[in-house]
Image (cartoon, helix red, strand yellow):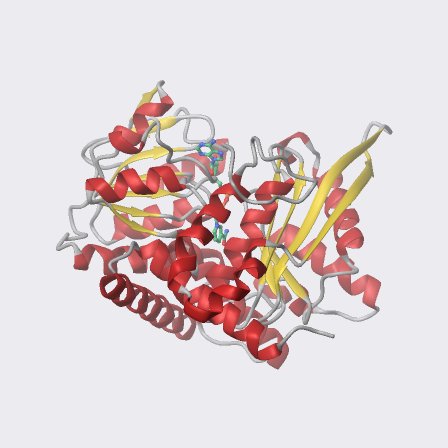
Length: 428
Ligand SMILES: NC(=O)c1ccc[n+]([C@@H]2O[C@H](COP(=O)([O-])OP(=O)(O)OC[C@H]3O[C@@H](n4cnc5c(N)ncnc54)[C@H](O)[C@@H]3O)[C@@H](O)[C@H]2O)c1
């Protein structure tokens, strides 16, 4: 894709990647920003980018080097906040886009953060536990200069989990000389983590899914759901839909796709994935070899919950779902968005649909600062309220302006970020 924007020298116009999708989304919202549009360039430039070399000694005595990033897109409304991804295909463009979507998401649900994201270009499955720990600790030391409980707070993302967060918290604390539990969220409960955090993103997807279904007159009980990605987000969302009486008819992960029109046994599938690392080989469904067929599965609700740039012009027209809930960040390209809009598919955008994770991360951070911990019921109630309110506000604005939910969410978010920018003024 070639885009019309000026891009920084470290990206090329050709093959600009997810950052190009994000820039196009900003273009679509700019006409709705009124006088604040004069500040919109702020949204198109990450505030700070740190690229680090992460060397480790491997178990066999050789030295390996990995490329790491931390991008702080915007801190006008508060400290940076966003996950850390370990994946062999991580690029700077991707981390920039993910950090920007965090800015938009945090403002859309009105939690007091800016946006940030980090990543290491590595397939963690190729590392031993010891190597994984050394890489995580070295990466944390390298980005130590820009993170902190009041500066930028990492969290889990693809291929990172509570254990990685525990090592990051420990490394940062060792460097500080005191335990700083608020430096990361998504920690184990025993280290200041929050009840409900692990399930929060999937739960948020489910909550907004119920709201969207109600708007479309779709009964969740008996609804057919297809989920791409069966990790933290997709696995929990599938479980909650299934517990509510929906039929999870298809699940795709990085290796395989399993389908069952009468509904998969999600608990059994989860047990299989816990044991084998993939949905491949699951006996309770039929495996399909053509991965592209997943998008054409007969379903009411489609939940992309894996990686970005999955729903494209190539597959958008084959989608049969009435509602798409973006559990993943950036799964739909702007051109695919247009096709879905034409077809009357309701797309609940990532910046609302998957905001449950950062919302409970915010609760975790608040609990860490006050050293006073809430019950799971309190957390889920507060999460549900925030998700519903954010969905309703965006729905109403979309109706009023006759725009998509994505553009409406971007209007709400960009207005909040740019108002903060304007009120603060430019320093010096
Ligand atoms: N974890 C969170 O709290 C959180 C919050 C907001 C958004 N997200 C987003 O949700 C998405 C998933 O994150 P997660 O935390 O569940 O990650 P995860 O590592 O727990 O799971 C990722 C899942 O995606 C699958 N996958 C990977 N590549 C794939 C491919 N090419 N095709 C199909 N499936 C593939 C994996 O097999 C796995 O099942 C990401 O886009 C992430 O940015 C996560």
